[in-house]
Amino acid sequence: MTTTQLKTALDAVLKQNVERHGGSPGVVAMATNRQGNFYEGAAGSRELGKDGAMTTDSVLALFSTTKALAGVCLMQLVEEGKVSLSDPAGAYVPEIDELQVLDGFDDAGQPRTRPPKRRITINDLMLHTSGLCYEFFSNDDLKFRAAKGIPTVVSCTHASIRTVLLHDPGAAWTYGVNMDWVGLIIENLRGKRLGDVMRQRVFEPLDMKDMAFTMSESMAQRRATIHDRAIDGKLTPLPDLALPQPPEMDCGGHGLYGTVGEYMKFIRMMLNDGAGPNGRVLKAETVAAMCKDGLADMGLSAGGWTTSVPSLSNTGEFFPGTGKGWGYTFMTNREDTPSGRPAGSLMWAGLANCFYWIDRKNGIGGYWGTQILPFQDAASYPGFVEFETAVYHHR
Image 1: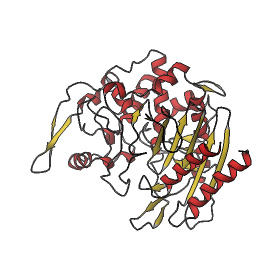
Image 2: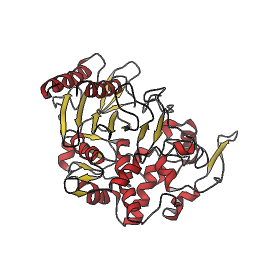
Image 3: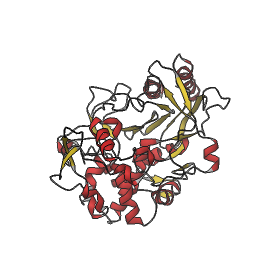
Image 4: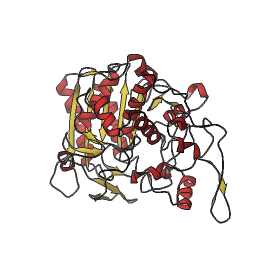
């Protein structure tokens, strides 16, 4: 298929996604090979009811697609011998050893807790096996936070990640605030804020400018508005909904703002075994280690999620029935996906319905960015699957 035919096919996916009844307000999507982007597109508007079109340089709240970038910063420390994945996390952030395992609630609704059977390791944090969760994926975490007055994670505060373990470290895969703790480990070892570490050690080597925990004035002017989708499908713009600027804490789990074009540079680095246009970010063997399914050896799997805050997330799973693991730090598919992604590839997502994949076998990856809550949106997630499927079908 020619480049023109591919562009026509992918443009049609974006156009249909925003123009269909109940579609996305606006979307930016790109696909890359090892050399550069072979598709860049945008459709719809940055905010429903406003004139501003969604453009390829629109700035999005990246939410959990932040995690992989924090993972890179941690793996750089591993390369330098400054930290080992088997180290107790408490050796670098002592307060994590104060966290307890939840053992139910008493009649007054107060939590009962016990000490964990072993200390949380950095490996636990990178693989989401520490026992930590998010309040919007666990009624127990939500109830614990309410009982203890712990703020929501989107407050980007240190207090927001000092929650409870839902199980002993290593006992299960539970998706949660792990990478925010990893960010603190990175800060303690580097002696500077996570955003500064990322800029010096990831963004500059990859020539990434429009990405930060605190938006520049230019970025703020191009920010796409997050929309709320009601149960009846109605979309409402939430122009005032944004992460704190500047945040108290640079959250390695969810705090970055950026453009899809800048994220593609990170995806390309992973496709190119750690090499960037302005220097190497990681050794090739480190990239390979990050892509390994770390749960398989533990007899564990990654899976879906159940919402406890329906305004933030729907209940869901990516490709149910397809075996999934976890690397450092993205989901891995243990078998080929229906969209065409081969086994052993990487993907993850962000709360406002951003999705990406990295296929190192074929040397391609892509990102589908919208700004809608709750997560696993009825229009945006199928749009991502259609986009990825079209890339594989037409390439």
